[in-house]
Image 1 (tube, helix red, strand yellow):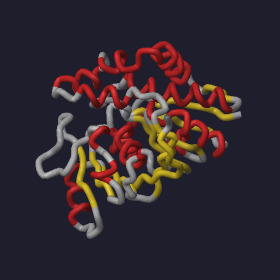
Image 2 (tube, helix red, strand yellow):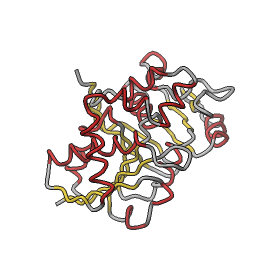
Image 3 (cartoon, one colour):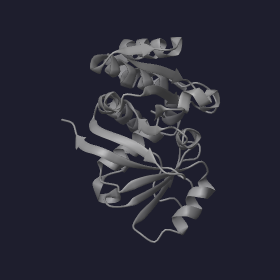
Image 4 (tube, helix red, strand yellow):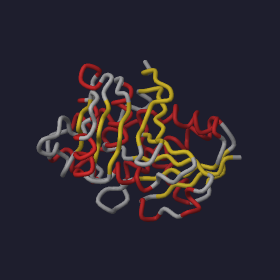
Length: 247
């Protein structure tokens, strides 16, 4: 039996959500989708930071092949190599490089959960691969949503629902909260129109307002990658533990 909790915001994370549990962080629009995209394209690893300045300083001190990436109000900050658009993280740009990434919501949620026994990041793009890895791990699971500017984000709940729904297919699951059941319903109700639903969320509207509609289409590609993105270390970095783009 795997017990599954969904936590809508990092500020609601409690010690019992982390202790002896696997935690999966979701920022579907866009940080965790971008991390998965970068690793699928051959990035060596993604180092995540809770501020732009911390990412700048760490990148400045690193001598290997690297890219400084992030966003501020949805757009790349001055002096950064790339923003937070998952489609920009192509093999020719990121292959073999270490990515230094800071975003408004997603990387901060990863940092907040760094005390978990096992820590992963996921989006709709690798939901089933992540669920399969969690079943192999067999501890209880917390699905942590990054939210948008301190408010719960529907797209993150849908991403959590995608993983929780896949877990039901792989093993015996007990949903420990109403939020987990709500997340599964949100995913199943929107599965056939994910891009449309994501466009109408607050996060989607923010992205559309700066002309980055393609990011939403990318994030809505359910199971685009057979890749598990695991977070290790403190400060945290993310590496792929399996990597095969799905057809």
